[in-house]
Length: 639
Image (cartoon, rainbow, N blue to C red; front, side, top):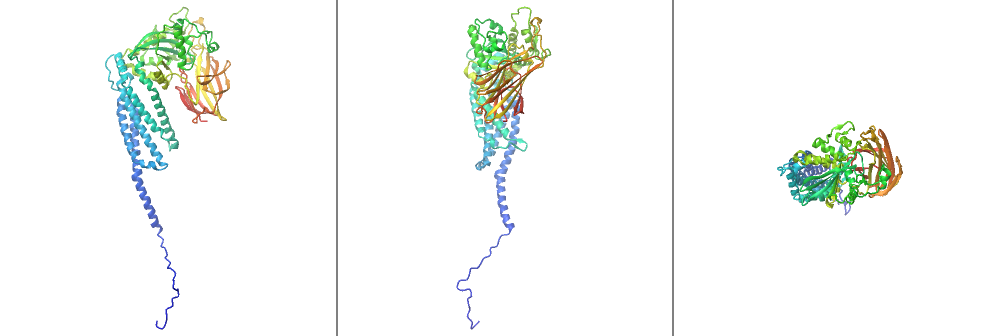
């Protein structure tokens, strides 16, 4: 417009223009987040989910193969076991490679520990299977001797020839024993790195932590056992007479009259082994051996206090210590001191009536002196007929002097060995071998060798009847029948162990009940009847951790004693049990806090010769576990 001047009302510095920010639509922002999540899911599926699914499927496959291995092993089929073990190793290696695909997850906190555990578990499995494969290859040549299914490489020839071949070749497998031990040690090392504590008790209905803990514990014990038993395995050729004759003393302990190491010493046999060939040199009753002594020994305090009418220590009463090796060291010392011409031996093997009956089940009936010895139940004692006939011949009073009063047991042992060794190995040996191992585990067979390495192996296997030296809690109940007839045939023993916290210590009450349900025998000598069931005269010793303090001892008919022996604190008493009667002993004591382990674990040791007494474990009067004590057992107390 002409004639007018433009006026700037904002001045020389106009304010900045305000830019209004446009916010993205909420759905657009959400789509970005979803995109990121989808990328993570895709990556997770590719790198984690798919490998994890493959691992799960592979584990299922491996588990199925493992069950096949178990079945083959249970059937004692070496050939099939070898095939299945090879398949299991292949499956485990495949599992290992699949887990390796998730190896990078091992760097992630928390989650990584589970991947590493899986790697250790599979590594342990592979090492264990490799040990199994070597073991099967090692045992296959001896399959028929061990009663296993497999192609033995020396099935021809006589029984003596086969044994000689086995002994001659056994030293060739000793290197394999070392390799097996290395594999087992490797597996144990892998398992030791698995941290069981971080796993839950259960996932759904599946037990997790207890199962892992059990696997670690069992394998650790097995590994230690095998490694510790190596000296024995390496000494087997020596023990079997390679390079020289070995002689052994076989002792028969009659558990119907229970003694500290398993039973009253009734009979003995001397047998020699040369290149695996066994020959019985002599078998006789223990009374004849005692009669040959040229020196008398005064009876110890325990016999004078608890036995009846015995003033001297005889060989038949020498097994006073509950530690088998300690008892028979004393036995052997007395033997050679009083009968110096007795043959020098390389070891002692003791067995009880249970072994005789199990052997008769396999070998069949024996007829000796017109008597039938079988495993059938005899109603006169509700026991195997072989046991009744043994007791009838050896125990029944007669009106005349019977010189060979107890030799029937020696004759029976001799005939059992002759029948077992005089046939083809495939007929009896496998079953006898496995029966012998089972009986040794249950302490019906005990070994004491002079060869130190062999004895170490025997003790590692717990076949030596030793009182174990442990750092933690401990219990062993030992009964001795002194002149109480054969009443242990009938007496039933039950034990209750009740524990409770008492300040820093633990107070424990042991309740032992003895019941004899059978009627009394006529034990009058003039009647001439078989005296099986009389009044049990029982010397009781309870071995506890060193430092335990007695609180109360109820049920003893004589003054109780407390002392230390074999590294334990012992509580001692005496009582009787009448036929068709009962007795109960109640012993209360405290255990120092430094003895109780964090796991509250107690080693309960079985007395040799006992027939699986029933044990009940209680805490504060509440029962937590019940079992038959067939072997030594580690018990966990829930304090």
